[in-house]
Every structure is written in C-alpha cells, then in structure tokens.
Length: 324
Image (cartoon, rainbow, N blue to C red):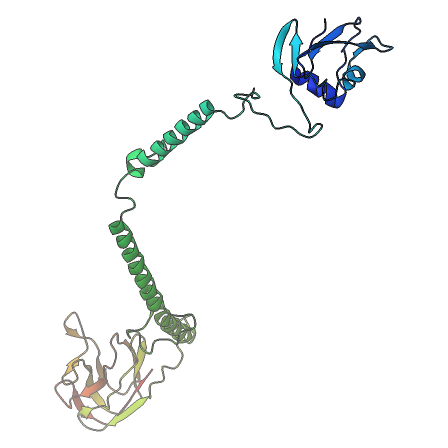
C-alpha cells in the first residue's frame, strides 16, 4: 500500500502534485474520512506509468468524506492538515540552518572581538619601532603633555619675534644708504653706504696715473713766497699720501733754509730722518727742487730761512713755491 503523511497529502490535494517520481505499479492510499472510516484510494496510472491520486482525492472532498487522519503502513499519523495559501511564500521556523563556509557565527565574532581588544592594548601601551627613534622615545610621557605644548608654543612665538628682528636688522631691498659709515642703520643701508664709498674710491683711483711719477692735480692751491731778509715762507698744506714739491726759483740771494712742518697745530719742527734735519737747503742762486711725501692729513709745511729758529739769511732775494 502506498501511504503519505498528512502534510504531503494536503499539499498534493491543493497543488495537484501528488504523483510518483518514477514509474510505479498500481496501489492504494489509505486515508480516514470524517467518520473515522479508513478509505483505500486506488491510484491512477498515466501513460508514463506514474501514479496519480489527485482525481481520486477530489472525489472525497465532501462533508462526510473529508479525511481527518492519514494512516501510513497501518499507523495513524494524526489529524489531517489543510494548506490553503499555496503557492505563496510560506513562513518557516527552524532551530538551526546550515551556513555556508566562512559565514558569520558566534565563534567568529568572538575571534574578531579578541583581535580588536589586542589592537586596543597595543595602541594604548605603545608600538615598538626599530628606526632612528627608539621605543622609549616614542612612548615617553613627555611627548604630548600640556606643559610641553605650552613650551613649544612659547618657543614658536620667540622664533617668530627673532625672525622679525632679523628682518628689521637686514632691512628692505632698495633701502636708502646710511648717511655715515658708522651710523645706526640696517645692514642693507650700510651695504648701500659701502657701495657708495667703493664708487668714490674707484673714482679717486682712476685719477691717479701709476705709470711713472705723474699724478693728476690734487686740487691744492699753489703757495708762493719771496724773501729779501731772514724770515719764513707762507705755509702750505698738501694732500696726504702723495708727493708735493718744494721749488726754489731763480734769485740772487744767499741763504740756508730748513723745511719745517707743524704736527700738533702749534709747534713747527724740522723735517728729520733718523733724528737729523733732512731738507736743509743752502741756496746760492741756483734753482732747487725737492719732492716730499706727507702721510698724515692737515699737516702744514713752510721754509724757515733764519726767520724763526732754523736757517739763516745772508743777502739778496729768494723766491720759492709749494705745489702738488
């Protein structure tokens, strides 16, 4: 006898799917009707030798014939189950279902939680490094304290102030040259002044002819004097650092004259070399010309022909000239 459970039978009745999966021989299906009487249903074989109970079962769906239970192999399987909402999606309830490989599970969640806890512990305790910085340096408590941040801000402020000071000391491009070589000016202004001084020196050097002993005019006024008795010539102040000339012009006089200079602004002294008078000129009518070099500025010169404390005058007229 062919028997089915009540769920499958109800589905078969509603969907008309109760049929053999393969060729079968004719058999019977035992069900109970509403009166509790067992009814043996014969299957109907189709052309493929499959057993169909649908048409047979439809004949039982009357008030007195609706089966209340299903008997399988002589055992009462309980009340008949009616399924009325096929073919819509059916809700199911299951204690557990098979999961695909690698799917989320309680065990896998526990592993993830443990891994996160390990990462948190590592980050809190510091990460060891093998580079130029040591682990102690990177995990030092002094790295990110409020005090250190305040100190760092103060240092940045000091650096900004120092930078501004340096910028002021350097000065802007195109600054006007300092008015003096030692004035209180920024560096750029002093450099402008230095450039002006260099230009001035170049101008002065270009006026000097280095070939031989010829120089351009020093701009000093020539001084001439004429003595007919013991006396001194007019004074002459040469430009320092270059020769000037002492010339005795033609005359008929006779005298001994000494070249003097005034170094302190008051006293006239002989021009000496190694302690002895150097320019002592005995004039007897022949022209004389001497070159002298003075290293200091604003030093006046004169010729003393017995008019002060040096030299003597005999007779005649003596003409002399200072030029540079």
